[in-house]
Image (tube, rainbow, N blue to C red; front, side, top):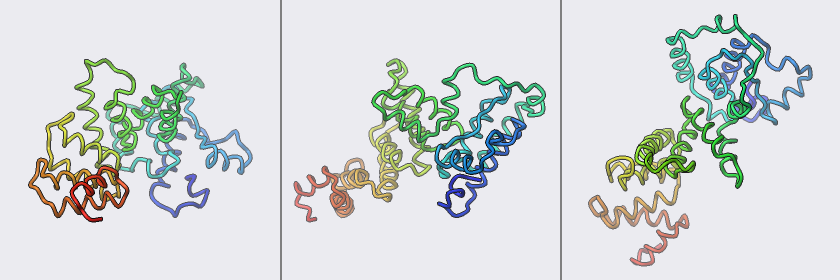
Length: 283
């Protein structure tokens, strides 16, 4: 049962079934009962809900794509679990690669990954990777590897953070890779933005407005700024207002400009407040 149902925090929804289906995929690969070493139901409850403990893979023959998929279905936050469409697409791709669980189980071993760091990344959620990145002495490489793993299976937050790493060159990649990384970042920001990640909508708007990683497109920039503004992002409100008020790349429209600048100012956006004062826009 999904942790949110065990805690009684959420009503039943399809993402609860995604969690359970992920457990079934683990059982198929391992030929084991989950948490079979625990005899105390309360201890299992605590491990799942509080410690966020998940079963590991001991079968070295299981493809990494299968493991990544299972890990994603077990995300503590149901919003970050993949859809059944994504799940079945990945399973279909594995099937087309002639992957057969029967063959894997016939040669099953009890060996774990040879590198402990691989296990740590496998077990890390997107939220944990964000926390790792934000630590003053955090392992940013490990966080990056986690974001890459979750982005592969469609996690929009992971895609946003991959883009963040690329855009800001967090891992100090060579300058010669800068241009291609900027293009990759812009595409990832777009995918995350289309997945309703507000920060990505704002930054993708910047990419379009400034021509970073793609051709300059002010209309497209406004479209994504407005998406973020609709989610109450004051910086996005300011950017839309500023563009229309000054006619920067679009036909000047003082009415729309003032409307968005006021909204931003009401939300304590400093640049919007300064412009309203400068041009006598009454708040």
